[in-house]
Length: 153
Image 1 (cartoon, one colour):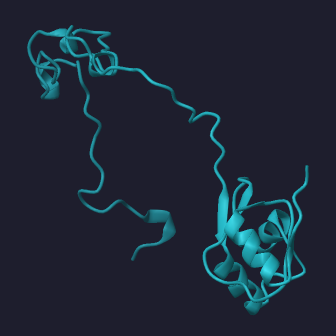
Image 2 (tube, one colour):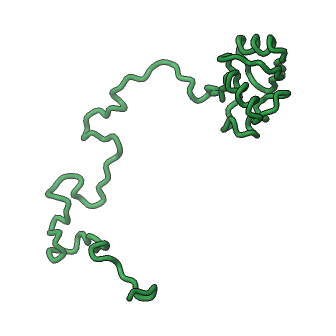
Image 3 (tube, helix red, strand yellow):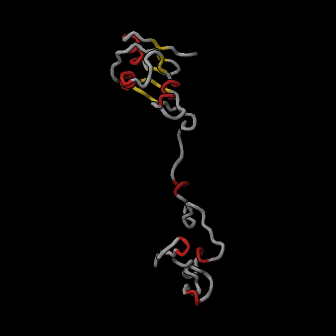
């Protein structure tokens, strides 16, 4: 009967470590599983990533030119008007004041990206948008529904 004091590993579940460089008796021979000759068979051999044996590496062969702005690009958390209307109807957000902080607290948007409201869909409720960027079509639809857009500075 097995108790916690006399538990053993299941047969074949544990393998002994491969002991390299310990002579013929180890079963890994004189070359220690490294084959014959060559850079990788020597002790202390390390080849840098991307090294192609002296050939010009791919990352140096490919031309690099042009402008990139990926470090400074602003990415937005976007939400459409139809989604806002859905969340208002479900009671997840109050229709009086909608902005980054209220949507963040309710868990609708995640991350630290600033908010941008897009004009896809229709909105029936009068809402006030604060601390967010708003597209022209979204602003028109919000104003026609009786709401307003307040943009700081």
